[in-house]
Image (cartoon, rainbow, N blue to C red):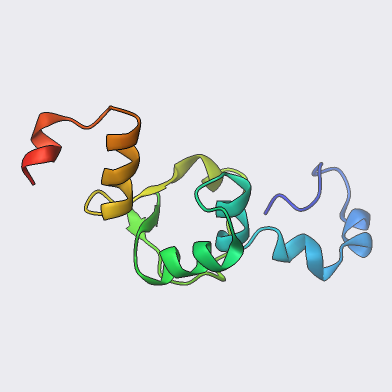
Length: 99
């Protein structure tokens, strides 16, 4: 899950708090990765279906994200937010502009 730093001992699990698991929620990770500025905005984006983790679109903001899955968080291909981000960064492809 990524809440303890090593796999050597389960004794470290005694020191885990609820906040360790709350930091692994998708909406919190989105704020940390700068996909959203505020937590409420991140929750709204997830609920509206703008975020995918790997190949699946996730609509549950309480979805727990492991450290390995963090690298695979992206915008959905049909997302208007993704399109605006690409336009702003001047990386919008001509094929994407047609759709």
